[in-house]
Amino acid sequence: MLDHIGITVSDLERSKEFYRAALGPLRYELLKQTPSRISFGVTRGHGKSSDPGGDFWMSPGSPHLPRLHIAFNASSRAEVDSFFAAALAAGGVSNGPPGSRSQWHTHYYAAFVLDPDGYNIEAVCHAADSEAGL
Image (cartoon, rainbow, N blue to C red; front, side, top):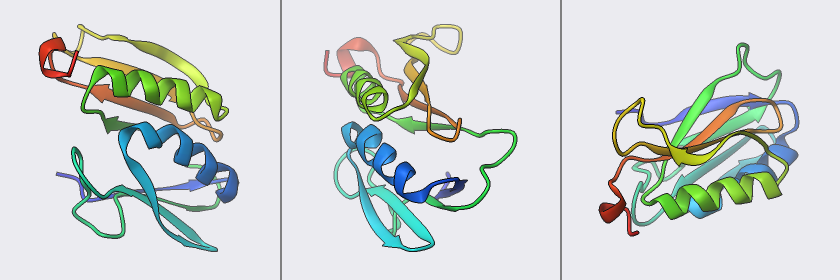
């Protein structure tokens, strides 16, 4: 099990605002902020971060090459849809709209966006329709 991940971004403030909007539907909140580091995490419910500092960190610098793919777990398909809409509204670029990805498994439902630095960000729900609140 992963505890946390960190990325470098070309514009910390721009990325902060993008991720605040895009990850909001997944219950992620801004937890820590200094001039050189920002962290997000879930503080309650599905996906709660065990580290009070959060599980998704970013700092200023040159973005990683090749660009990373980071998948965030969603508790429902509706959360995946909301993530996608929020990420696009915040300036993300579609890299795959919400939908089933049965090539990975029967209930895989995901959406993909490219963040301001080109990282491939995914929200994914693994639950069947009936388990995902639909």
